[in-house]
Image 1 (cartoon, helix red, strand yellow):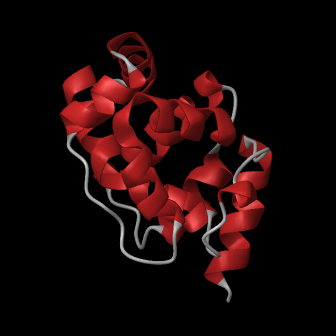
Image 2 (cartoon, rainbow, N blue to C red; image 1 turned 180 degrees about the horizontal axis):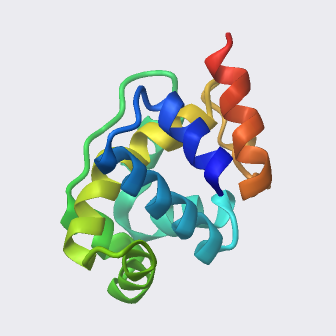
Length: 134
């Protein structure tokens, strides 16, 4: 996943350790969820519908807390993805709260959730490259 990590890091405006860990978390989360569409459905159905819509839309991104992310995703899933990248669940939820809105925003540049449905790990890089060179 090195290329995708680099692309996501570049799309988020850098490549510091915190961002790299956040990218790894998001990629693991997408994989464990069965795709971006499934992840978005989980967030929507578990209390983050309004925030998710703001991330998808072309306006500003509504902030969420780590606790909200943990509640929406469930502790088991969060702990699984956190363990994969070598951090604890609490740190993972805080990082996801900070970076997940930005990443979903990047994957839906025209404000259409349909742009992200069906996106898999292999196609995320292409979508981000396209957005970076607009």
